[in-house]
Length: 393
Image (cartoon, rainbow, N blue to C red):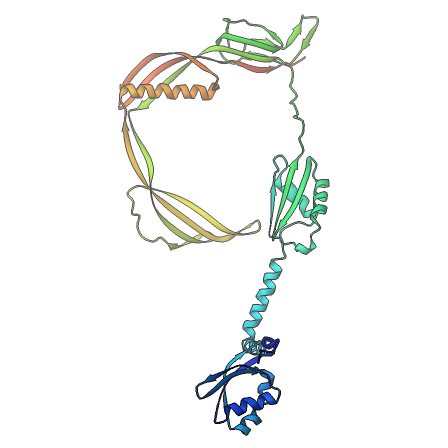
């Protein structure tokens, strides 16, 4: 016979039947309307399956035929429920875990803001909170993404479009900021004056009246481009604009050691891990003395946090990195070149990368105590103008 429908829900039993009249036993239960299936010959008898409800009516038939039965298998929902009832606390734990997992999967866990440059992410998150979008909010309580986008757009000026997208328990807020015209700074009336003694090599007055010409020698504080137009009776003050370059002399006292020591990491390291409790640290791993002759130690502290609150509990890792030191020796000529190069880089860093070093002159040079000492004057063409506000009495 075929297996009856819903046998897995109704429960089934596998029997091993033995005795002198096994065939008669099978015929009798078939005549009684009991459904059996998977009938197979077995050791000293036969093996068959039947529904759990029919199992309880077999006793009279067994007596009638003189057969014996032995249950070799049980399957179906009734037996599963019986096993779970024996382990009801375990089953309750599974049920509670499933409920908690379902509840956690229906909450917002993270909110990510993308595309904002001028508007702070904190302002966008504050506006989203007013719309009901914040961590640990129930997902089913959120409005539709289109409605959320309109609400955020109304709260945030300077935004041309906002998109809200939910993926699982994460929400992404995509922002497109509207282009604002550049606000030009308000400039006060001013002169352009020389910030140092120099010889003017180039002057360009965009606005204002140039006072000096090329090859003029100026001192610190002299007016280069005046913001006063007109004569003494009719004076109009403007914002002087322009660019003035001049030759400036810089004196450097240079000192270069002929022997230098360089340090580099070898890649070998030893870690020590500590459990931090307040001001106390308990070492967990990494015992033993340092295996390195020279090393440097870096400390990383990773405290536990809940939302924005840092708890007085965490892990601290000390990374001891092995260091290899190498010595480099320079000739006096190489030391001289290195000192000149260092001074030139300093000039470009101080006075602008568009400065041009025209010439250099060594006034004094000596070697003493393993170092090279020199005094050098550099002739540099650089921007020499600075602003001087005009104060009207």
